[in-house]
Image (cartoon, rainbow, N blue to C red; front, side):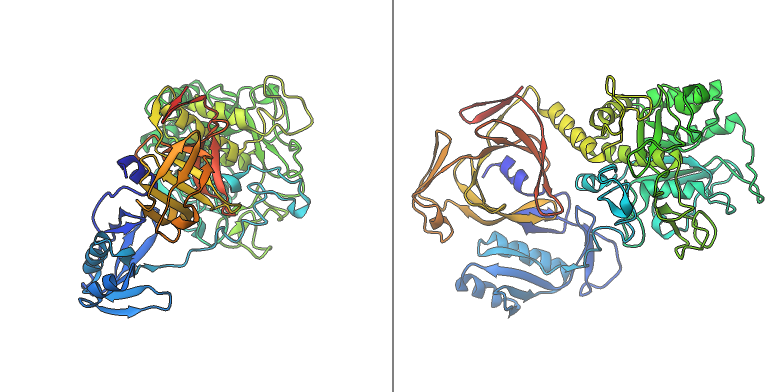
Length: 601
């Protein structure tokens, strides 16, 4: 079995505390503790899942002789499933013994008997049906599919690690749905390091922050980029009587500079002055063109809520050519009555103005958008009369989608991000789109799902175009089931049946080595000889049409493409979807096959 095939099937080890998973060593990261050896030790997996290991090894021996070889050394217990539990001297020995058992060739699998925590629900409780803007199936009378397809996009990205600066009027830093979201903050009103809101009039920032990064924690809502990191910048303040506090232009500059210094990859601004100063114009241009190491920072502005044309907001920050100006559509798919429009409008996103508003985080307690009278003081619901809306609600949703995109390709330039969003946006509304846009909907309603898939496809194309790769293996679809796939390695020594997924990796069971007397590959068919293996006998002396080829192009477990044998169409595999369907991202490449080699044009 060659190295590339090993990488395809399994994860590469990075550090100690290793065990075998599907034939390859997988490493865990130890969570530091001061417990004794016999107490469980806890680790993080590559997916940031917490698992524990104590003094037990779980294994399945191939035969009685193999079983006795190890049960003589260790106290054991046979389970009703046929598996064996071996009791050893603590977590370290659990790893050592499980490795020795597997490496002996005596077991189908052997690994510590992991302590795991039940997974939380797939989505936070308010997601369905209240977050219609992310997944609209017609709830509350809304027009189906007037949404950003974020529900679908979450199968590919969560915004993990992407830094989003929110320049606004303070934040509820104690809100349960924002715990762990903020990695940096500053208050440019009181000139301190605490960006918290000071009075019940400073509620806007909390609502915007939740739309971007409310945590997936089983509590309330789910932000679009629920694993992104927020940089909270309090720029706008209010007096205790609700009157807005004035601010200097220099303070606006400080806000943008702080965002840049803290490493912001996206900047959200749900505000505007309608009279942008030259200094602000300059700093926005500089960050949009030179920020992020020259790639440019996407700066997202709300277009404004006067329902007027470009003549009214032509001097606003949102009209600058370097920013993304976001308008609003309601739950019926119509342009919101208040949404400003004109030639500088770039995109629209869902908001209020129809039957529904936007569900998001609210300042805790009886004050805020929900004002305590609806029985849910920490959130404003889409069904609330006083719910969050306006282009202020539309802009952070687009910022969240950009964070999803940057997780999958941090090297995207600002211009590439805009191009992808424009290419994939939903062309909604009754007006014609000329050259892809119009003045009321811009380039259309942002579509997170299609944008993410385009990001993935473009990154893969960039990495493999103009190169040739050896065929690493072949796929046969031998039955009607979605897992009725057989993989045959190019060297004909390994045959494996797809059994499902384990985490983000394919699960193969059984995996057979040299189980057939002969395997012949010619004329796009695979012919199997005799086999003594019980599973292999299902294919013995039979011939199958090759459905596709597998090519590995990188070092990561999912760095491979699937190419159909008949049409030579290319796809990037992204795991399983919500319904355990395979997720394929079309690459639309020109592919040429010559004997056992694939060339990408």
